[in-house]
Length: 303
Image (cartoon, rainbow, N blue to C red; front, side, top):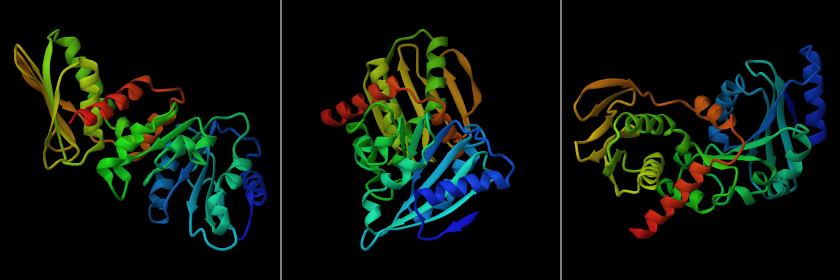
């Protein structure tokens, strides 16, 4: 990594070219730009997750740390290629006046004619689509579970400000749960009369799973608290008995259904690179997430 002090977008772009030349790869094989808006204390972990995800999605990764907005503008950056990255990377620290206009630094660094995704690993803006950096992207990825404050309210705010291209990793985390529950109902053509979701007391993913079930099945879904980790059980009540998936340890689940023996199912909690990689595979609107977001807001209003 090359350290650039008191630089600008042109200086960072020039270092990208020099880094590619040093690596013997002057041609670009990257498919997108990923912008990570991150706090200093979680920057290392976020960049490591992006590095792992880049093996599936070669990208120019721009980490942006927004510092103190007082004083004159200063742009410092660490730029490089290799070291596990399949594309190019820059960790950009902004201070002073430029913090109010981060897009002025990031815009010239976007790959031409390529999609742009922005990821907020923690403390997302209330309205990602109107955020200065969010406005540059086709895909805006937040993570309500990574918020350091008001974690229980963040997913509701993200749903309230939903716009085409928005998603949250709380939604991505329940992809395996949704797949298993859909498969269970394909195997058992039974009418579900009610449902319940049990999880940690504050769980954005559980909130979304309950809303998804309520929206798709048109039944009342109750929420129950457990010691976790994450979601620990989902029960679908039918006239023949309950269909349930219980995962008390965050690794192995037990699938139970009427008239059939219980069977174990692998349902391990996934790590950040896998979640991020899943979201970067699709850049179009997620209609199911949009419908679930609307349902979650309606359920909150009704209570």
